[in-house]
Structure formats: C-alpha cells, structure tokens
Length: 108
Image (cartoon, rainbow, N blue to C red; front, side, top):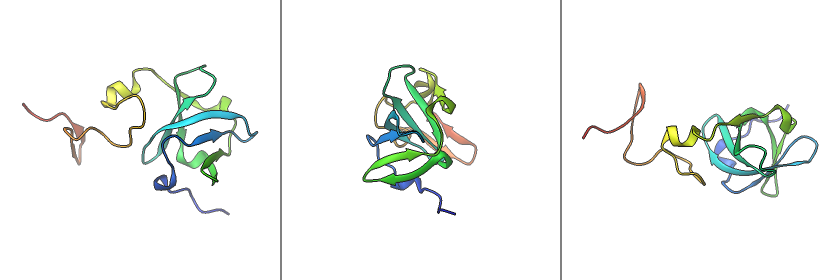
C-alpha cells in the first residue's frame, strides 16, 4: 500500500496524466481535498480531481489512478463562486474571513 499524497506536494502548473498516460491538463489550483486541473483538450474548462485519485508525483508530473473520463468537470462559475482568480489560486482572497462555519464575506 502506498502512502497518501500530501496536497502540499502538488504544484500549480504541474502537468497531470490519467492512468493510461494521456494528458488531462495542468494543475490550476490546489485545495485540501481536491485539485482543479485546467483541461488540456478544451473539452471542459477544468476538472475537479480528488486528492485520493493521485497515484504519484514523478519528476513534477502528476499521475492519476483513474481515467480522465471519470473526472468531474467543474462549472465555469465554480471559481467565481469561491472568489478565486482563474489561474493559480491556492487559497481564498485575504479579505475573506474563515470561521468554524466556513468562509464568509467581511462586514462593511
């Protein structure tokens, strides 16, 4: 059994390949439980890839243990809803407050 992948080991911009070695795209953002992968083929804007689907990181490239047809396409509004920029986001904007109840907009 292999050790689980630590999200801190994943880098924005790293290439991502499925279990057959086909290009999925590049990491656009890293979250605690999934990565957003910008699609290489333009079929969708991005995929939501669970951290558990990452088999290995080899020479900076991410190898998945699943086929890209099993990936969850992200909607074009996903990052907008979270308030994240389109490329390279790794955390919510600084003006959002994180509480036990979740991330909330600051009061004005």
